Image 1: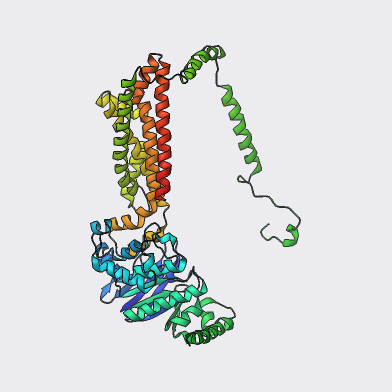
Image 2 (image 1 turned 30 degrees about the vertical axis):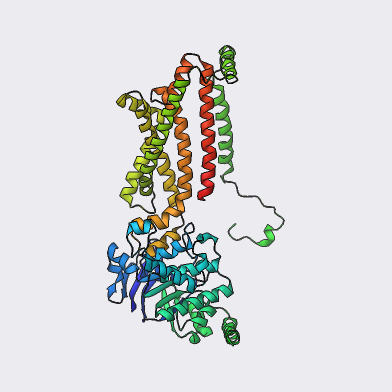
Length: 266
Length: 271
């Protein structure tokens, strides 16, 4: 469904953030992108919806090459891709409801959005999503009154109300505590399953990725150095991705946590 | 010095490195500044005899504040005040409305380079020309009266507000705006959802401040014939009617203070 072909990004400073990346994501497939800071994870997902302009290569979303679209067509293509951000990126002075409805901006005209006069179907969809993430009672609060976990859930609603085919998720848990992080990851993966959404999730917490995501891609210096099951991430593979370090503890921890998860579920 | 051993550094004491690292340059800059300051003060000539004579006149002016005369020129004061208020409100509204698009254009992070340069050019011209100079020019074109004042204040508002608005837009949180862009929003929707909420409190605060400035300026513009309360004030000074002048100044102070109070309330509301 999404196919990157020789995707390359060279920043003006000469940094080669991505080097001829080839990657294919199937319909409904959730993929975690791991790698050290500066490996190009953020650049990769931003090149997909062209918040960052790729230098060369192609990004195929179904039958369209996103890298070749003009501004109008790009705008329409962006509606198909929901994005969830690291620091939530809610517009802080807007209400929760306005933030969620802003996901519909690609579908409504300027005056409707300016007057906050959205079609009833959009409003209902926003209420349903807020209810799904347990924030219906917060609809008229201003976004900056919410806690981190609540903000990220609003961010998820904003991405989903676009009715996208693909979710681009940039470090969704980076500023959250461990428990909230798991809740958010669980929510994202559950929603992807419910709606058969494909997703690319940038995440630097390896254990968290292994816990929730069926496919892991490791990025280092702008190149893919691992692509496979989370269980295949041996200490050797992690060294390939992150460099030399004692990885036994990380892997051990995951297994312990899995046991906890099962116990908790029972 | 490239490789510093801990042993060499322990017990050495520590000072913040000075801003200018070359000590010769640093001290010559400091001494040069003070030398210039002393020289500059020595060029100011004070005619103490003239000051002594003037003290009386100054004192009379200050004494007038104890008995301000609101009544004998009441209708002149009222007309002037009304004209000033009309001028201020009209110029502020027009100025603010024009400033917003120019401010958007003058923000480098949202405007393409040609538009940026044009808008920065407009801002630079407006800021380079002092109000009084603009007023003199416009009085020459449009004749005496509040029309010249209104145009002057509108013009000055554009330079002030566009520049500060543009700077606030340039300092906004990029990611919030990016998130709106990622949803497929049109440019205007992007401005309305991603940019406007971030800069609105500052825009409202600055607009209130500019209304305040415009009112004070309207009192000055009268001196060059651009209408408003300034014209009345000027006449009062010319006739040595310090008590009427005092009354006018008290009114101006009162209005400016109440505007200040009002802007405080409004700014707290929009935060």
